[in-house]
Image (cartoon, rainbow, N blue to C red; front, side, top):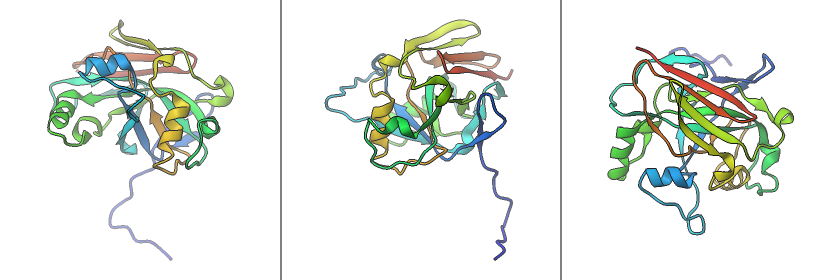
Length: 233
């Protein structure tokens, strides 16, 4: 049977894989909110792991752009923020997996940026509305090349940092994640059938802040890689 489309279908989104010309087909993008205590505090909230569960928001795969991109300052915001993130790429399907099984689902890791229209996010938060306008918008998910787990081993520690125009703005360590990667995967898989191609942005450390036209953002996760973004003049 021939399928007739009313207009051309959007192309599949792909992410680069370090050391190969093979591409990683992106299925979904999950983002963990408030996963470092210091960042939660700078956003005016606290997290008690003993009584709270992790929470998530999503970005559409079409928002993903590669490291090294130059983009325009986004519309309808006057407070455009960077958020440096450690990203986990899922390479195997799993549902209701245990923390002990979680690493089996991991294909690899990458450095990423969760770009945020902070004024729109905070306005939504204050009124109890979804964060979509502040988080899920064009060119808001930046990703460096994915490094395969076979090359890195299981990554559960290491520095995560970000600079703007060469000045360090964020610096922390993956050991400070409130919910670590196995805990995130196990919890998320209670609600979703995780699939190959899913990406999980695991949260940002403290030090988030605004950027303006002409700024260059450079981030890194030790042992994993770098990510870069330039805001056009």
